[in-house]
Image (cartoon, rainbow, N blue to C red; front, side, top):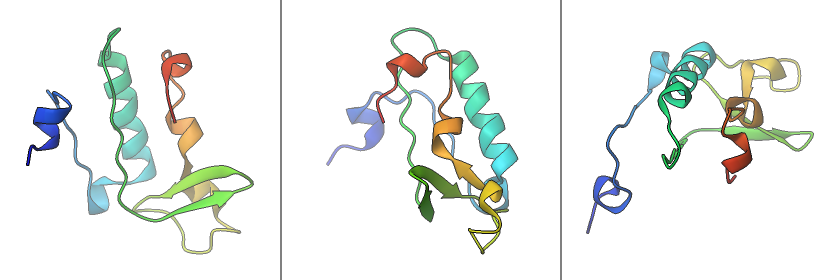
Length: 93
């Protein structure tokens, strides 16, 4: 069985776990990746964790997200905000 590096021609990857996966750090890392992207590059964003849909906005649970989603929704990362980029017209969700 081939790994994702062979199938998707992955040249670089970033893994954020536990206290590295705060909302601010995820945002900073994704912004850094977008800044390096060039035409023809692909971004595969894989999230293994909890998420909620709040008024049709999918939100990710970060390390520093608060448990009570309804009263702490801003601590859950809006995936649409995460994916806003100069390449957003090319993004497939």
